[in-house]
Length: 227
Length: 313
Image 1 (cartoon, each protein chain N blue to C red):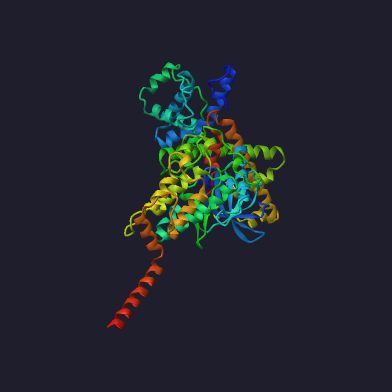
Image 2: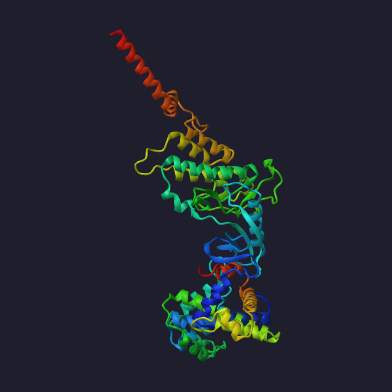
């Protein structure tokens, strides 16, 4: 991903859109759950952050050698959350004009469905970033499978890995439910998980800015499963 | 949005290698390294356990390094070096190497369980002999440390993790499947605290068997360090450690075989190259070395003296 500080106005605008798409939700959820800000304060902080990245040259000051971009954004948000003069800053941008399209209501409904958080604010942020990355990768996979006539495979993947069914369905149960042989369930799920992995890697490759080590990000995600 | 449970399931699925359609079945995670994860797996064709080293991501650099390591290890058939059985690419695109599964613990964890000084020196000798074999083939390990020496459940001593090993072409060794160091000058390869000074300075072209000798010397000092109740460090052994860990490579042992030779001679009570002993020390060493013969001789002389005394009286 190019940084929103490089290229012409159009390129910069597109880069900022990509940055916002990748990070607004984890940042907002972090502000609400990790920093315990009110809905309005959380949205203000996120809006201020993305406006200041270019206006105040914060993005240009990011040093990949010191922190991942993701961590840098969180630290900036921490500063904004603690800044009581934020409202004044918003007025300067044009009387509280929101530059970023944030679907706070939908995110609030999602937050309400989550179990209470006991982790540290930093862990909450990392988890929410991962949740948002995986959510979009799943959406990509569904779109791709639907377009290519493999909707049934996505339905199987969804039943096996996404749905919160308790107890978890066995492969035999899934085979019966989807009128497949157990070996076919194994093969379909294997392929779907492989494609999901590719979708995550593709998103990471798109959204990891130059300077941040993609392999480091991927290693953090794929380093190992639970033993 | 994904639920917490779905997020965890997807994370687990991403982290676990896809071995579908292969001969391997993942059993559990055995450890994590810089490049990826080591899994305890079952080779379903031969019904045996293997250690499956799998890269975290399918990047070209990492894949090349892992395959390079597999080829190096494949060329080092020695009882002190973990053999590689297989290498390739999994269905998910990740590169893997299947190695013999060692049921044991790294020396870093097993050290407190080892016995007296002689037993600890013998463990050192086994590790040094494996490294000496590699040196004879022109291979320099470059990351020797207690974590990379495994002690098996049946007393095996194995040198593992040849991921940053270099193959030196000027060693006179026979043709090797890979060559070079895989790194450029200025790159620091190794582990702080165990690296030779030339490694710490990133002088890749100066790193050779003597750099491994330095790390082995550090390992020897750890193993030889007297425990409560044990006599102080022997002067000859201290001299061996000092020679192995000299700042300048030229002052160290030429390779692991030379170092192992001195340690073996010390264990046998023979003179060592690292220490010039005085006449009294030499006599004392010989007395210790030949104490049984000396005791027998003494017993014989006492008996003879007694017999003579009795006859005279």
